[in-house]
Length: 147
Image (cartoon, rainbow, N blue to C red; front, side, top):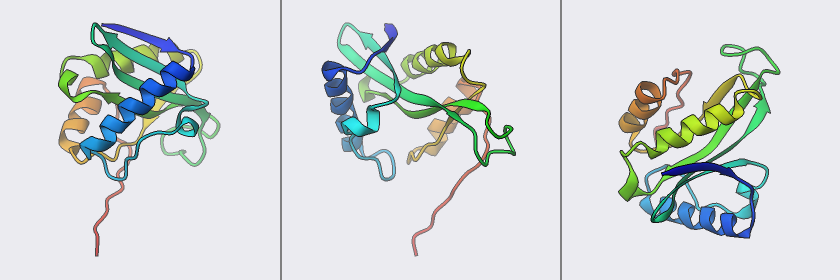
């Protein structure tokens, strides 16, 4: 398994869009749609590759906190994970954790926190992954009920 940070070029863009189409087809997240160039541009991109090619990605960017005072002071730099995805047949093999840890190490000098949101339908599994395996802290939840 190779994890690396890459620059956005046409080949990387095509790979990310193809993987996001697979993710959208899974229907595993509320409201998820496949990416377009504008969704990816301006982000730092991390890829997981094995002998089968790219099997996962993480992308996000460093931001300054606004209206997050219960967690961090205004203006604190944090890395917002926009997306993290591993193809279904490669899950539960440590790839997502490896991507996260690699990105965490890469942004340590620029950000004080890593922040992400999730709209997964399998919240029990994702909470286990983020809270138990990655040592993230639960901050808030937004719940919905259709009327």
